[in-house]
Image (cartoon, rainbow, N blue to C red):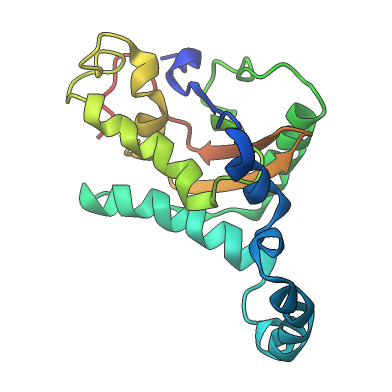
Length: 204
């Protein structure tokens, strides 16, 4: 069997700025605070700092939500849960950084079982939490129908379910993800082993 490259498709979403409201959101909440609150805000942050330091590490605030979002979908189907793989995450980081620097936003051409599976996502910078990024892939299940891959899309287009099928592919066990930012977009890359989306096989 060969890995169906177009099965793990890309997702790209943007929010179009709309007037003053978008400007305020991008500038941060301080722009919307009264003048006396703006002055008090730094002091409030300093008071809260001992509670914030060490409470949520960058890894915990990204790795765990991404892993949990995948495993919710797998648990709902009675599939083995995925494990976080640091090597895959580091490789995904290199890939995400390359895409943020302007590399072509498309999948790596590895049509074998030896390379990792890959899901890509990009969206307006600063607007999406990690869980929301993965949820865009999970939402593809509304187009999913049981059967042999790639005949799993109610729309007739495998690109409409390819992220989801990789998330829940029955033989996938490990995942590692990373994000990077360009000037306008956040980019999420997830790598999976064993890869999914093989022609002629059932996702689960």
